[in-house]
Length: 98
Image (tube, rainbow, N blue to C red; front, side):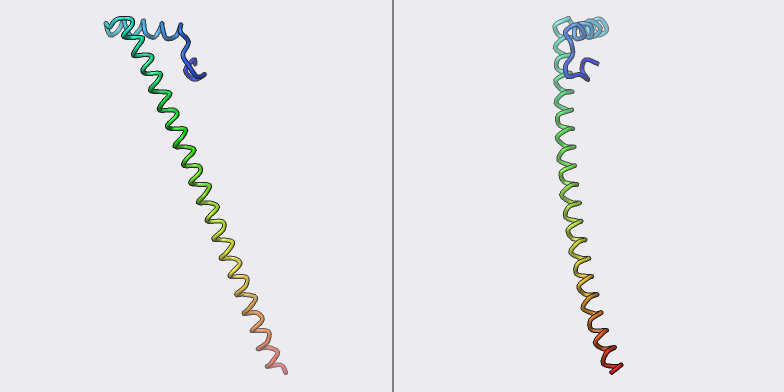
């Protein structure tokens, strides 16, 4: 829980280092260094993942904005074409009726 909150408390670091030292047979300072290095690596990986997530979200936002603009332009062109053809059809109808 202490890592989730941002950093590991000194008591938790000491406990984990004691467990590592007891199970691996390395000295207490080496175990503490491993714990500190692991925490630093985890924070770095989390920061990279957050940055990648932000970049991906930004690319998706830009892509959706471009798609929306292209859709609007296509619909506008379609509406103008339909209006023009309807005008031509109305004129042709009026000439036949007259």
